Length: 166
Image: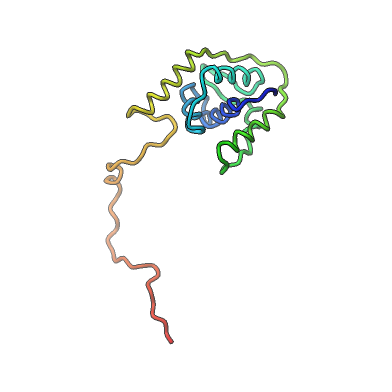
C-alpha cells in the first residue's frame, strides 16, 4: 500500500482501540485518536485516511459504524504493549507499507461535516459531566462509603523487629 501516512496508522490504532467488542461510531474513534496522540488530525486528513484504508480493504462499515477487517487485524496483531505512541505508529506504518491489497474494495466516503460533528461530539462529551467515551471515571467519596468496614482485630506489623542474640 503506497503512500502511507501517519494519519493512516493513527486511524488503525484508534479503530483497534475503539472497536474491540463492537463496531465503533465516529465519535468513539475520535476519542481513541485523542487518547492515543493527544490531538485529533484535521477533518480533511481523516477523510482521506478513511478513503485510502477502505479502498485497500482495511476498514469496513457496518450499519454506520466502523471496524477493522481481518487483514487490518493481522497488521495490528503483535504490537508492542509498552511502546511509546511514536514507536507504535512507526510499527504500523512499516506493516502498512509491506501490505498488498487483494482486489478492489468499496471506498468509505465521509464528509468533513460528519467528521467535524464527531470531533465536536467527542469534545463536548469530555467537557460535560456525562459519559466519557474511553477514560474510566475517577472514584468519588461515595464509593468509599459503600465498602464494608474492616474486620475488628489486633493489628501487628508483619516483620516486627527482633533483637539479635549474640
